Every structure is written in C-alpha cells, then in structure tokens.
Image 1 (cartoon, rainbow, N blue to C red):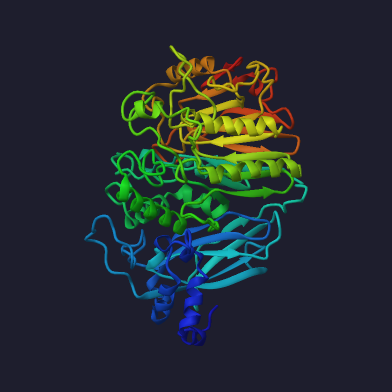
Image 2 (image 1 turned 60 degrees about the vertical axis):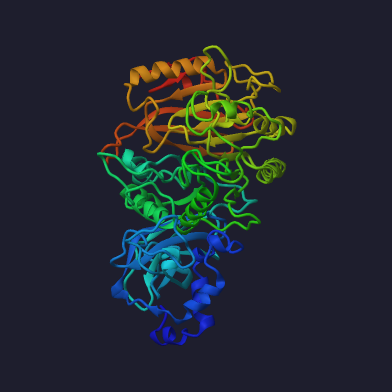
Length: 597
C-alpha cells in the first residue's frame, strides 16, 4: 500500500498528476479530443487536491474486467464518496449540460487514492502486478488500470483497495487470451448478449453462465443501456427522464450496474463489448437519431461516449477521429475476433420512425438504399475490416468471428416483394453488404461467423449471397451448398420482441414459420424468448447453443435450451444432421425440421 509519508510527498504537481494519469479513465476515450477526455493540464491542477479519507469512500459498483490480450487485461472499479454511491452528482469542469440539473453540485476538489493487485491465486498471495492511481469527480470516480505482465490463456484474480487502508473491493476473476500464434489446447467458450433494457425485465441471462461457470469470455453486441425514460411496473432506472447529457448517461449506466446478475457477470468474466444505438439514442446514425440532431445530437453523443468509456472495462483505441470503438482480438490460431461498429461511427442516414417501409422517413431512405457509396460502417472501418479478414485467413486462423450490431442477412416478409422489411439493418445498406460478400467470396475467406444483435429475436442463417438485389451466387437452401459462412443473431437479454411480448408461443411460432419459409438462407427463427447464446469453439467445429429465458419479470435462474447448431470447419454452412440442428428445436421454426415445445 502507499505509505502515509508517501501520500504526503506526492503532493508535488508532477507526482500527483502522474497518479491521476495512471487511471486510464482520464484518457477515455481519446486524449486527442479535449471534449472526450480530461485534459492533461487539468490533471496538473489536481495536484493541490486533498485526499478523501478511507471512511469517506465506498466501492459502489463492484469490479469488472475486459478487452483481454495475451499479456494484459483492463480492470475496473468505482471508488466514490459514500453519499454518492449511485452515480456522480457533479457536472465536471468544462462540461456544459444541455439543460441544468438542480441536483448537480460543483465538482469536488478531493481525490480518492486506490491501489490494485492481481494474482494467479484467489487468495491473492502470488501477486503478478500492482499499481496506484487517483480518481475524482472528473471521471465519475471510475478507475481503470491495465494489469500487465500476465501469462497467456490464464485465469487471474484481482482486487482494489483504498490506499493506506484495509477497505477493499470484492475479488474479481479474469482471463487472458491465448498468444496469437499458439495452438489452443482446449475449446474457447463465449457467451453472446445484446439488448438489455432495465425497465423491461431482470438480467437473468447474465447470471446463468455465472452459476454454470460455463464460458471464458463475454461478448456484448450493443444496447447495454437504453436512453428512454422508464415507465415500468417492474423497475425504472435513474434519472427519471430520457438521457441527454453526461450526468444523465453516467447515472443511467450506474443504475444498470445495480442489477445483481450483471454485477456477477462482470465480476467473473472478462467482457468484450461494443455499442449499438441506445447507448446514445434510438436509431442513431452519423448525424442524428429519432429525436435529436444537429448540435443537440453532437453534444449528446459526446456525453454518451465519454460515460461509456469511463464505465466500461475497455481499452482506449488509438484514433484519428472521436468515435472509434472497432477493434480486434486474436485467440491463438483458433480464431480472430473483429468487433465492428455499424451504428455510431459513420453510418449513413437510417430509418427514423415508422416500420417496414411505412411512416417516418421511410420513403426518403428507400431512395438511398442502393446507392453505391452508401455505408453502414464508414469507409475507414470498412477498409480495416477487409484487411482484418484477409490477414486472419492468410495466417491460417481456423475461424473469423465478427461481432456487430444489426442483422446482416437479407430478410423479407415476402408478401408482394422480396425487398427487405427493415432498412435499419444491412437490408438498408445494399452496396456495403455486396462489398462484404464480394470480399469473402472473391478471396475465398472461409469459416466466417457473423454475430448480430439489435432485433430482440433470434435468427440463424447460412451466410449466403442471395440478397435479391444483384451479385447473387448459387445457393441451395436445403444442403447449404454455396454459402460462405454462418450468421448467428441472438435475442435480447430483456428487451421485448415486437410481437413476442403480446402473443403466445404458439402464434409467434407461426410467424417464425412464415419468415423461415420466405427467406432461403434463414434456417431457424424465434420471436418468443428473451435470452442469449453460448459458443463452444474448437478447431474441428463450432457449436452455438441458444438459451431461452422464460421469465424476466422476476429474478430467477430458469432457462431452456431452445436450439443448437454446429458449423464444421471448412463447410461454411450450418451442419445438416440430416437437417439443421439435428432436426429439432424447442421454439420458433426450423427449416426442414420440427419444433417440439
């Protein structure tokens, strides 16, 4: 621990500024952009700060880890004044809220001193790294360290404590990934989530892999929070309004982090998350959202991004622009994981209001969907993505895993047209999807698994170029021949399905059967269950098991396996045995198979 004498000595400007700089939250998400991180000059001013005493502080929101590499991992906690134990009640210096909050005080002029230690054993006796940093109201009292010097594919335990004190956080568990060129000796297991809406139910899906201890890492594909004002009989988040400024987004994330199962998942597993739209605003795109645009939206996005990077255990990606979250991870020679941003980075205009081509600005978007220069991800990210796919294939990694937000495969209702019914998905960005398919097919990049969220429903498809617009390749919906990979799109943690929350399972299964019949590449679909899926990844095959949560209105551990799918290395399609998934599922509709409820 930092000795009392040392605490007195570090009152020199440089030493204290350094201890603030040790906290990676001050870099979030980009030191190059003063509106998105605390300026270094401000940290020097903090040299005169007083320190909170241990009795004044509490670890308010557990611990978390994320963005694991082979030799390091990000670890996170929040150490805040005891009366401030849900979220920062201050508006940091230099932040101008869109509207004033009477409950927002002036920033505190005190700092909290925190240490971490990480060890190879749960009792924290074999220490492999440790460090000290300060935190303040400038970063909502959050703390992020990079624990370094770790061994690859190894489990570690970590804990934080108030400097010169026995006051400690709970102990967290984390795990590094295999070295890039290493052969992975045992299968890697992932839990994949999206769309966790606090007022719409409890986050039981997060807790079940904790109880089972069934995965190595957690992927979250976006909508970790929702910006709406709560109006629920189950539970409602703070603040009691829609989120617009930094205070709001911090308070909202803090409320979500009071869910016991979310806390447990962060404590036990390292996370690799990306955002979707609701981390900022509904159906957000490059320049606006459903209910904000212009300067209001720009400030709103800055506030949301800053709060997200403060609270999430992720790395600060080097960037020349302000919103890069897309990044990649190598899991030995077993897989390369690419986490994309198809929402906030540089998405062209999307549907704002309306549904299935009716209402809102649907008519305007319909005129744009097939433009050659239309993009859902921005051209910088797109070039990076193709390069990552090619590098992964060329180095011989067994699998290419792509985590992204919205359903990639073409989906139609098939009434009078084959046009896509949701232009907010890749069906609204046809040229961009053609470019992705072209890169995969032309370069013979095999074993690509696209993981999607956002839709609050489950969709499992062969990754086949049968989009109906142009460039289609031969594909057999019964055998899967002609596909180039697989798409696994999971349901929501708690966010309700457009029809699954009002119709019984029998009727939602009929709707799923219609969709499966009208879409050749769609092999299984379910509209009823909330839930998640787990992936068991080996060199010979990859297995995806979909879990349905029957009740999110109460906190419980109930879940059902509602479908299982296998992808064989080199086949680039869902395995048939003799039909997809062995011929049975427990909900939804399975092409050429049965549903036994």
